[in-house]
View 1 (cartoon, rainbow, N blue to C red):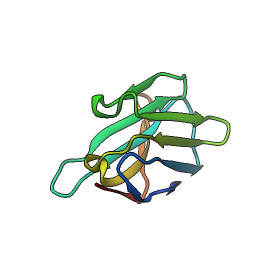
View 2 (view 1 turned 90 degrees about the vertical axis):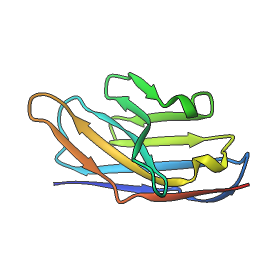
View 3 (view 1 turned 30 degrees about the horizontal axis):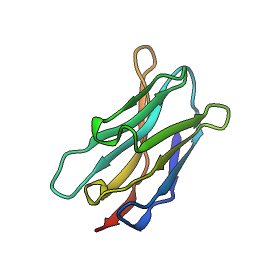
Length: 118
């Protein structure tokens, strides 16, 4: 089994910064994609930023230029540096680990709350 443990959420004023961390442990194998999704109250869960084990990165348009995803493949960790936070960034942020194709898998963390006050 695989576990994802997130940390780093909290309350911050608009314009501030936060850094989220996610550590994955367990039977992780092959090339995969690791990253962050978020879900605001009454909204669907949406992709924020993901990075493949090969280094390809995808960002939501709403966070480009403000958020930076990084990843340590050896330690199975992923980070999200969030700068210039806005009230609309308020959501529960979930860490995600997925592998597509042969022997696929998908795992989610428990979520960490990010609240941006205006």
